[in-house]
Length: 60
Image (cartoon, rainbow, N blue to C red; front, top):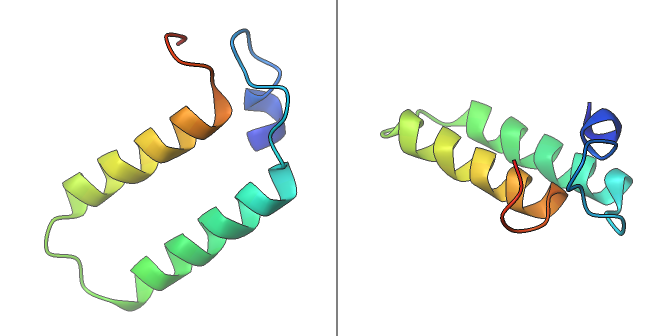
């Protein structure tokens, strides 16, 4: 999925997909281990982090 997103217009060219996938995987597994008090806020934060990592500012 990350590789597909990086082919879209406005995507960054220098993203280490392997490292990003590992980081997101670890983050999601850690979140699955604990009850979340504000799941909507966490989902929004993770989504923003992934978007800012994959795309140049002002795109999408």
